[in-house]
Length: 494
Image 1 (cartoon, rainbow, N blue to C red):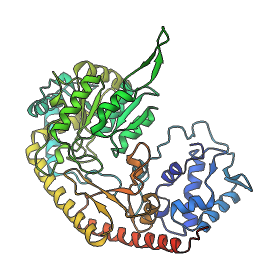
Image 2: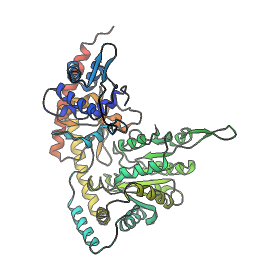
Image 3: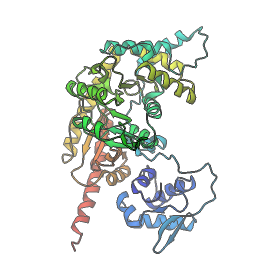
Image 4: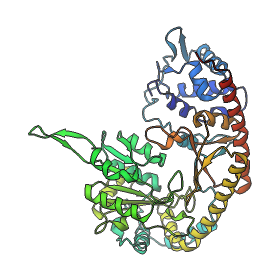
């Protein structure tokens, strides 16, 4: 971070206001930790008092007091005309801001707030009984086995089960076209590491899954949002790079990757129709652009039917379409088993790349995942029924308590995409934290930082906890909206 990006600083502050005590002391403590850890590097210029106060939805005096206290501790230097800068500190070379994760959703995983309802991270937090049964079955299968357990492409039983799963969904698949990963996030990381070089163009929807955006940013790619109905134009007009050949001609290369979540999309629960799926698969083949179909939430459609993956509409075996899946949303967030379905040569290359990192995933959980796949017809309806009930409850609570907020009911998945009538969610989220609830701002879901008046709310909590969360949000909105109207009444037009 170079000191000019207010959004990054606010994200790094994360849960600063969720503790006990005066706000200026809580803000001081968080800034102190960021400075001492080397996240805020020496000579980084901090935002002006008024600017940071406005974004954090606090009085200017809170920020001034925090900066003054840090100056007394010699952690910042304040000079008239040059603002507030981080002071030079003697830090070891291993403490640096390079590669720091600032996304607020990931920050809440790394530093979960105490005593706050987290509407930020959307994954089941209670393992179902079927998972324990699956682990018992896995233990029995491991008894007497003699094997090192180093399997970079994944356990053979799970690869075979996943191949049968996709074949049953209309995509003929062999085990050699499956790679097992440590969750869907590793699947995206490995694919990006193999297919994307610094400066390459990656096309995504907006809004979209923020974890994917962080992976693409880490790869130093150029992320360009596109509308699905303009995908063909985007694939033609957004080159990964332009280089000059030996004859001096400019060569426009294709985008390195397209990333989509067509089924139970994160964040809004939308489900793409078959006509659009067929068109996207055809465009990927026509332009020879690898297309990732993120199906992590695909089995959570409220209709009870799982749409076919994009690969089902591709020519031959759909070699341009790469399918990513995971057990984390269907079963439990802590079951870190994901997978990639792709052409066998690509799977082979991915396995070699993966071997460099960890030699392969943990086998016991993979065997349990294979057992869970065999129970899919029991697990899926039960999970969808609960999600649908909680979705409907959250929608009803929002309509009753916050009628000025707007949203479209989801068709599946775990989250609603909610819009404020005015203001921005970055500032509102700071007030919400002080009322005991954490919400993710919409800009985290957009590669260009848009959707500032949107937030994503999950409906994974039991109904009484969802009601409490909405109560807290309503109280926070009353405080935020009241403050905004007071400022508006006292604003002079000059």
